[in-house]
Image (cartoon, rainbow, N blue to C red; front, side, top):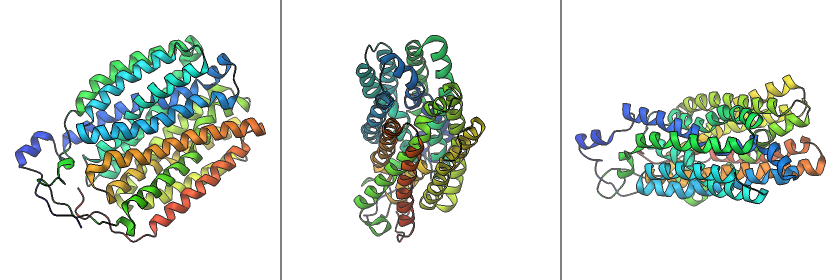
Amino acid sequence: MSEPVNDVGSPGARASRGTPESAYAWARLFAALLLSGIGGVGMWSVIVALPAVQVEFGVARSAASLPYTVTMICFGFGGIVLGRLSDRFGILPPVAGGAVVLGVGYAVASQATSLWQFILAQGLLVGVASSVAFAPLLADTSLWFTRHRGIAVAIIASGSYLAGTVWPPVVQHFIQTDGWRRTYLGIAVFCVGTMLPLALALRRRSPLTEATSPTTGFVLRSPRPLGMSPAALQALLIVAGLSCCVAMSMPQVHIVAYSGDMGHGPAHGAQMLSLMLGFGIVSRLASGWICDHIGGRLTLLLGSSLQALALVLFLPFDGLAALYIASALFGLFQGGIVPSYAVIIREFFPPEEAGVRVGVVLMATVFGMALGGWMSGVIFDLTGSYHAAFLNGILWNLLNLAIALGLLRRPVRPLEHAL
């Protein structure tokens, strides 16, 4: 157990900073959701642009998938770095800096004259900057809620799906009418113009980050969460995050290309992606409410089981209506998996470590998306279809399901009086 520490501070001081579950916390959540929805464009625009980039640079499908893969790798590392900065300085500096770099990244990518120039701009600039809209914002939001942490985390985690719902059809429309280069320039201007003002709403820091310092709060911690070392639990969550998102990436990354290959056209594929992620928002909100009642581990097991079922449903169908239905069901079934990791971390680790620990696990999820997106492209090039790629995703999902079941069976020794 940890050493006891004092109270957070006087009621007046707490009120001046804003308190968990307060009206300010909910208003802040709304601003963070908008930021996540806007900044999340970095994950989705490159997917919609994949066919146009492939044609312009004259490369194979696996090579055209590399910009997405590099983007997600940089997105993962960026979440850890910016999460650490958020732990130390608050969320405002990373968000403001990320908005500026995001705009620069899209502007530079729009001028690329080769695939590798596009990959570098898309990955090193857009990928890193866009990461602030995911793990750092999610971890920061978890510090402003106690009783309603599950639904709050689910709401902010829905920002990436909000981005995936809104951005693909918008980006597809402008690519068709103005080309992908001018579309990227427009995204650059829009992101900087909207994200910088919204960032000002996040200038206060949560008092929970001070509650476990030697002079402020009172927390008792178990040295062995779930009966294992903190490092072991962190490692299991990393593997779980990687495996679930390798599986998740097959429909999300390749649905636009898959629709085109089936003769339905990329426009229908973009609509399928939007539908998938729109239902993902519903799933994440519902899973947040469920998580507040049954906990993060059981929510993870439920989501993993449903995602495996949804992947199986893609195998026997390739008609237009069937793909729309399968896409909707996939979004509805799998949306609660990623937010459950953040809730598990807040259940079993101290709040002052939230930014880094959430960032590391969510880095594993985006690495899984990157790896899965690339693997699916390679499998397609080798086999000429996506059937084997779906089977590959199902196998990775079974690994995640095994970890989720193992965590549920472990003895519970979470933080006592966790804030």
